[in-house]
Amino acid sequence: MSDWTSLWYVWLILLTVFLLLLCGIAGSCIKFCCQKKRFPVETFPRHPCDLTVAAADSDSTTHSTVT
Image (cartoon, rainbow, N blue to C red; front, top):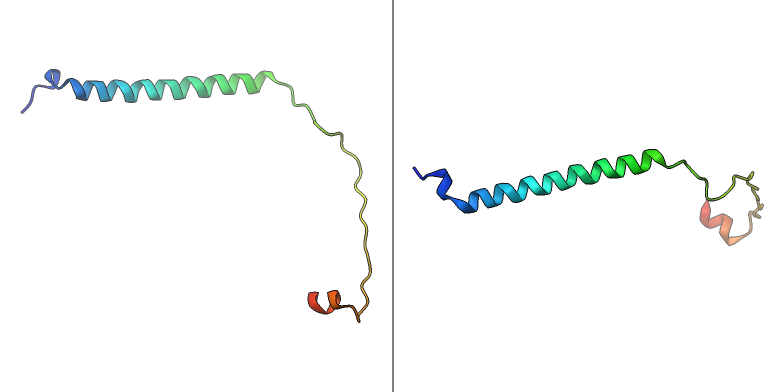
């Protein structure tokens, strides 16, 4: 069996993983706090939509292709 304290590269890998995990958690907390403080702002005001319908003849090629 190896002595765990002499395996410096294992501790280096564990420290790196711990620091990455800590940075991820801190980043998530900061992102959550920043989103919570912001008020939702609509970029475009809502307007009623207009719908245009065009009739197609039964003789047209578009109608025969769609059907």
